Amino acid sequence: SSLHKPIKHYPPKVHSSFFPSFPEDNQIFTQEKTNLCSSSLTIETEQKTMANAASGMAVEDNCKLKFLELKKRTYRFIIFRIDGQQVVVEKLGNPQETYDDFTNSLPADECRYAVFDLDFTTNENCQKSKIFFIAWSPDSSRVRMKMVYASSKDRFKRSLDGIQVELQATDPSEMSFDIVKSRAL
Image 1 (tube, helix red, strand yellow):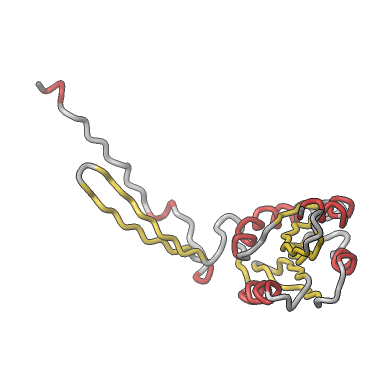
Image 2: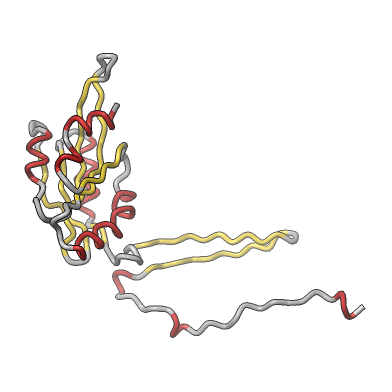
């Protein structure tokens, strides 16, 4: 009968010195609640994240506010850049500006994030609009810059609620108006 006793496994003790410490304003706060319900274990985890743990990048509140204004047609496009440890607004395009004005505003040798509100006509002759998220990472930009922008992209994009199409470009030909319009249809 001693052969049939269940074996108990205990998790190893982990000392707090194994976990990295974050600066106060980039700290990750986690609350865990454990419920035991008739032999089933449910763990609910709620995380409040002020910064991306992988990249350490914060998103300036102004980025979200200006994006909301773009959705209300106040701007045609917004160009964002990473400044230090946060994403900030670099340029706002007024509603009269064109797609060419937008692409000419992107630096030739530095990475940027951008959103563009594209108005177009469908094959059925209907007027439509779609908001594009564009990750601009030119081949001529520094490798470290490309890595920082790539590692922060998903979190930043998630902070902008309402993106309909994503486009990644390393060369102007990869984001020509024809390509953008075909992605919108």
